[in-house]
Length: 94
Image (cartoon, one colour):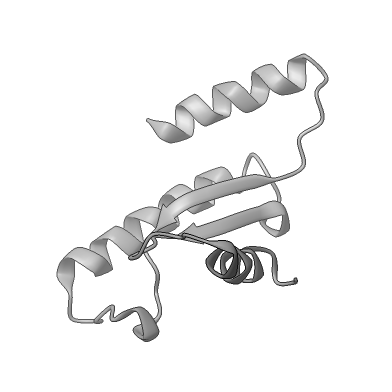
């Protein structure tokens, strides 16, 4: 459902000739072992596979290089240092 709502929103924005150049996909299940995600976890594996399908759908709206992924955060981002760290992970600079 989120894909269809977002697709409608993007189309409406484009119809209004408002430039859009980026998309943020939020609360994505991280793939990395550093987050404690086990390859044997059936729930995680299925969620990652489902999110990949959704990601592929969104790539029809925006080029992949203009999509930013925000992984699910297991702790609250709070304070300047956490925000700087989060910004580096998201945008790759600071």
